[in-house]
Length: 266
Image 1: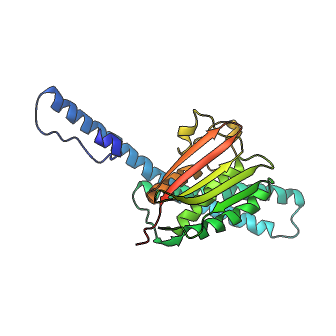
Image 2: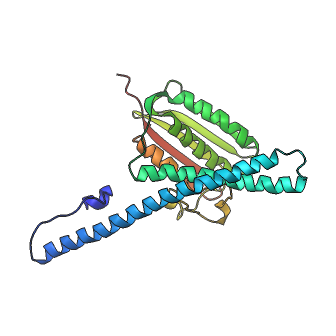
Image 3: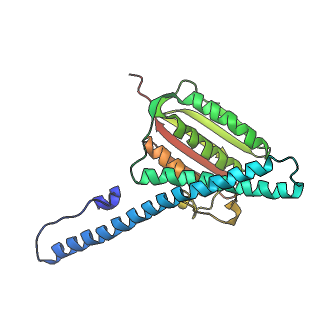
């Protein structure tokens, strides 16, 4: 039960020597865990290797697109086609970068650069950047951010946390809709909430949204989404010893609530 609860595939029952059914069952569990652990390690290594191999060709595609698009004599029809190729290649590049980060996290090689951060200030900055993207769909963002909330965290990852959640709210928000952002203090934690009035998520899909590449349904499938954003969000929150939950109702929107440890003033 402990192995299952903690998800530690390197642990074993190791009941010892014995000949009755209980000892046989324990050895069978250990052999099964050997097989599972080896398979998971191969999958993690495969993900890492493929991501590394894909980086170079995608970078070459982007460079060639930029070089061709820089030519003033390029026919308009060809320019439109190249811009489509470049946009798709950028999506692939972002996906590969997130896969590499998640692969490092899976293998325990991800290292956080921890420092004392003003999370309120970081939140204000992140929301301000989201306004530009939201304006493309005429989405209004309302933010209430309590000042002076500090935590110990990795600034780059926390900016990514904000970016992924805001991007998700905008992508699945409705035209001329709203996003409400709140950052305050609750029971020794920083609570950040992002609520939208978009298409929402079905009840049966909600538990699976943190899975990599999971698609709830066709209405939420978008060519600009890597399917890794919420997996990355969950990992970032857990890496900061926090927790994140999601509530949603189809047609009425989604609420993400994240709790992060508040820095002890002492």
